[in-house]
Structures are given as structure tokens and as C-alpha cells.
View (tube, rainbow, N blue to C red):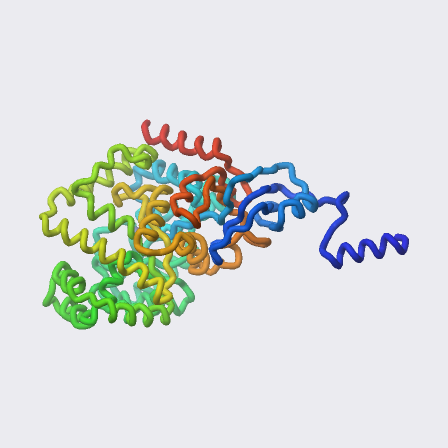
Length: 476
Ligand SMILES: [Zn+2]
């Protein structure tokens, strides 16, 4: 190398540039996108994203990136807003062995709605979900990244199928051994028949093993007691009504002693909810590191279940007849509600709308999650997350705050924040291109032009064919 060439090479290296002639090959360039930075709530116009394999290699001004990289596949994102792929932190797969194929058919639907990661919170097909997790990771099944709890922990003879029943510390230890051998991503606990002291033991034991714990918290315990034991996330915002009552401990003790039924305890907790007490209680829970998955849209759907007609819902045509039949359970129960029950459920929804911004103000991480899958009537895989985000904005979150619950808090919770949550060098190439700005109107998340999942491009035609295939399978 002569002296001049050497100096030039050194200068290019120093300024981080490469000569135009030596443009570097990548797999994908997304050009002329307006990039939504969810963390700061800002948009930067005319950017390009260079992707190699399943990772983002570089992001920058379009002209600079285009000069530096060349790609076989170029997506022109002129007029589009690019944001990180969405996360649904509470889904289910289940409904029994006869519904394995219908559940598997749900998986690509999530991608068609821009959801590139889901967290499965247990059902009755745990072995299948573990297999689908590995297949989507290997690329042999088209779908989002799946995190799963595997089978959840319960007490003896619960209403739920597919659980691990535990009634002693030794049984909990054995169950956690089994779950770790399955390489589950977190632990799910529900309390249909689980004894409160076993719940506390399970939360402590899982926490000691470094596992995250999501749960339905027993009425006999305060949320703070569960948090101190090692609970990581409260599933369903209704449990935060309980944490907002100054009488929580006393009502919990009365319920534990059999002096109150579940319904009576619930009514007293709601009646005694106190906003000032709740704000302080939520700050204490935030300091203990508790996150909350609100599933607010589920509360909304249920509260109006007795009178709303869902027969023409777009999402209904995408799921199979067996899954649709699991919806009948709740619909049948709603038909028998008294006017008082209907009024109480609607008050609960209104109270939940008030609580959500209080959680935000207390600094509790909010994990966007739907409860979609089976049993939970008209709460659809894919579409449900967009409905959930709309509820958050209805409750008073800004669109940017709502987007964070579906892009940043989930990766934080799962311990993979460095790989997701932003369109930046080194992050996973999960990208959603929208036709409108979601920071201006959260409904823009529904206007999906293209989804990139781990570097693989699904344009609108590909997304529509996923939906057409789902409709065809569902109508067979
Ligand atoms: Zn659930």
C-alpha cells in the first residue's frame, strides 16, 4: 500500500466511513422510514435501517446508510412510520387435545397484527407450546417469539386443566425442578384451590431460583405480602383494586378465616378503595419491583358481554370452531347476570380505567397483555392487543406511554431489554411499518404495511395471505 492510500484508509477508519466503491452487503435495507423512538416519544424522518440476518446492523440518515450498504432486498418505507415489533405479554393456548391444530393456527395470526413476541401464561397444552416455542425460534414455524410458563402451579383438583397440583413445600420444589427441566421462561401460579401458605412458599422458592413469577394472588394474602415473597407480576388489574383498599389486610384475614365469601370480600375491597391510600400502596409495590399486566380490554368485554353483539367481529372469522365454542362458557354465564351484577362489573371497569394512570404515576411497569386465546370470549389473538392499547389511551395514558407497554416493558421484564424495544444497531430486527404515526393516534398501530420478524420481511400481501389462510382453516 502506498503512503497516500494508507493515509486515506486511516482517515476513513477514523471517521467511521467506507469508500463508496466498497459498499458492504447486508440482507435487507428499509429506506426512507420515519423512525418512532418509543422511549423518547419522538419521530426522526428519512432514516434507513440495515439488517443482517436477524439483527439490525445500522440505523441512520437514509443517504448515509444507502451509500454505505447494499442489499438484495430493499423495502421502500416512504410515508411509513417504523416502530419495534409489538409484544403481547398475556396470551393462552388451550381448550383440550382436540384443539391442537386450531391453536397452532393462531400463531402466525399474531405476526399479521404486528406482534412479534407473545408470552404464554399457561393453558392445557403446555408440551405443544414448548414445542412451538422451539419451532418458531428455529424458523420452522412462522410465528412470533414465544415465552412460556409451561404448566402453571395450582392447588389440588382445580377447575383448570393442565396444571401441576401442589399442596406441600416438597411438591412445590419437585414442580419447580420439573419446570426448570422443561426450560420454561417464567412461573405462573393461580389460586383456584391453592392454599395461601403454599402460594407464598412457591413465590419464595421460585424467586430464590432466579425465576420470574406471574400470578393470580390469593384473596387471603395482601398483594404486598405476595410481592415481598417474590412475586414479579400481578396478572389482571382487578387485583390492584384490592391493593388500593386500606382494609385489604383485615378483609384478607376475614376471607382466610372463612368469615367472608369470595364475592363478599371482593365487594368490600371495591367499596373501600381509597385513591390516596392506593397511590401510596402502589408506590410501595413499585419499590418492591412489581409489574402489572392489566388485561383491561378483557374487563371491558366481560362487562358488556350480556348485550354486545360480536357475531360480525373481524377476529371471530380467524379462529376455529372449537376455539369459538370455548367462548360459550362466559357468554352462558353472562346471560344469567342480575342487573346488579351488570352494574357492578361496569363500575369495576370504570374503576380500572382510573387505576391504570395511578400505576403509571407510581412507577409500576405496565405490561400490555390481552388474555387472548381460548375461553376469554371475543378477545382475539392479534387484534386484541390493539384493542388493549386503545383502552390504555382511553384510561389516560399518552400514545407513547401505551406503546412503551407493548415494546419496552415486556423485554425489560423478560430480561432481554438490550435486544428489543428500539430500532437501533444490535437489536433484533423486529420492525413494524405503519401508514400513520402511532404517537399522534394509537389507532395507527392497526394500519400495518409491513412486518419484519427476525429479519424476514412480510409485506402487506404476505400478511393478507396469513389472514386468508387463517380464515380458510377456521371455516373448514
Ligand atoms: Zn390469562
